[in-house]
Image (cartoon, rainbow, N blue to C red; front, side, top):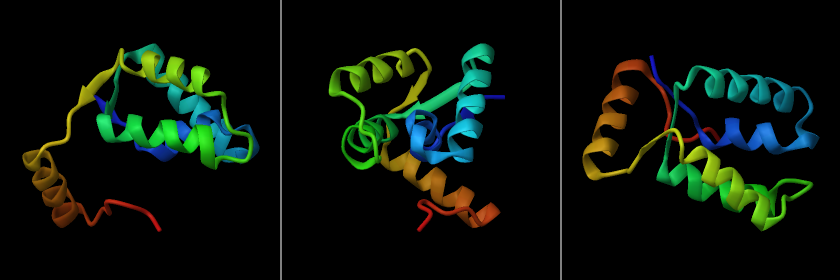
Length: 102
């Protein structure tokens, strides 16, 4: 079964200041690399670049962030469309999930 990763999980894997969240996120990424089951979206890639180069306490160099994105592109990448947004809303209605955690 494929696993879709939210921006926060990947960001925590590269945010060394995130403590336990960093360790957990790193384990998740390693497991998904080993299994080949990771899935991301174009939106996640865009958000990730901004967050890891500008918003975490120890921002990454832009070139390193680009290399990370390049690696993540080896996973299945979902291109968001109107239909995929409606499918996400259906999941929200069915399971009570949220688009964003505040």
